[in-house]
Image 1 (cartoon, one colour):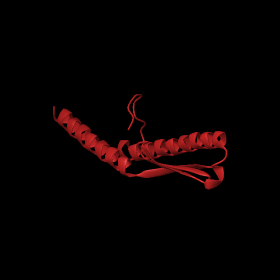
Image 2: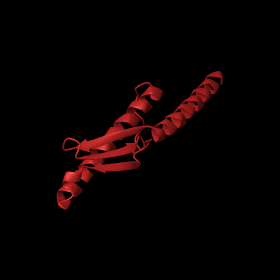
Image 3: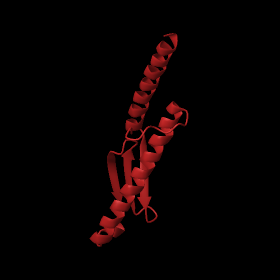
Length: 103
């Protein structure tokens, strides 16, 4: 039974660390930019969009602007996912999370 108590403590410690990382990701920011910075998206490490910056040269071409916004958001989301994965590996010792568990 001693091993079970140790495993339970380890699981609780890992859960606390994961909650800390979850909060840390909410506070951290990543960016995605396209076309040499014509469109830039800032989001949290959790994927919440905080701002979108658009170069004034794009004001006349709405279709291009829409495509660039989508591309910048995809880039920022990819960066947020990479940040989250990196932070979670620090808790799990590099082991991947089981399928369906994401932060």
